[in-house]
Structure formats: C-alpha cells, structure tokens
Amino acid sequence: MNGQSVERLMDIILQMKINLAHINETLIQQTYEIREQLGLVFEEEKGTLEHCLTTIDEKLKQCSTLISDYQRRHAELAAMREKLVQLGAEPSALPPLLPSETVENIIAWRLRGLRDEGRF
Image 1 (spheres, rainbow, N blue to C red):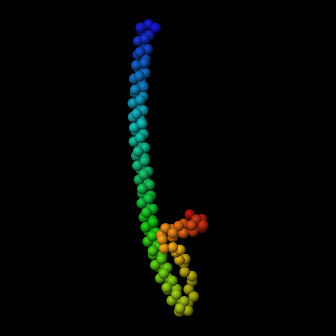
Image 2 (tube, one colour):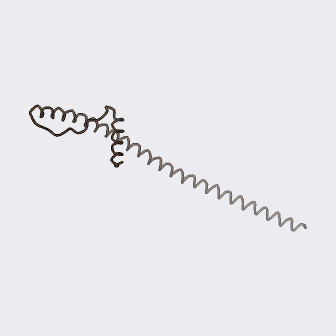
C-alpha cells in the first residue's frame, strides 16, 4: 500500500469514528427522551391507580355506614313487626338479617350473592 492509500484509509476510519460518535450521541439523547416520556406515563398511571384506591376506600367507608344503617333499621323494623303481630296483624316477612357483625364478612356475603345471581 502506498502512502496515499494509507492516508485515505485513516481518513475513512476517522470519519467512521466521527459518525459512530454522532450515532452514539443521538442514541443517548433518544434514550433519555424515551426514559423521560416513560417516566411521565408511569407517574400518570401511578396517579390513576392511587385515585382508584382512594375511590375504593371511600366506597368501603360508605358501605360500612350503610351496613350500620341497615342493621339499625332492621332492628327497628323487627320491633315494629313484633308490635304489629301483637296487635293481630300479619305483616310481610322481614328483609334478610345480615349474617355477620363484621363489615368484611358482610361484603364477602354480598359479593357471593351477586356472583350467584350473575350480577357480578
């Protein structure tokens, strides 16, 4: 190989090195941008999940309040029904008594009932 050929090869190798450095910089920049975008999507989805849990918590609190209300009203209705029976009336049957005192068991009972009815 003569001196010009070697010089030309060195120039080609140098240009390839410059091109690879540029490609590497572009890849690093694109990776950074994608990572930033994915981070934003992740935070958005995380916020959505946190909102879902907060909503579930609120619904469970409402459910607990309604269970207490149901138990109180059921007891009042049972007492009223007993008085009606004592007065000679034949009142209709009471709605079902809740099978448990704990909110967890009552929710599980209702979920089973809804599944059995095909509504859940």
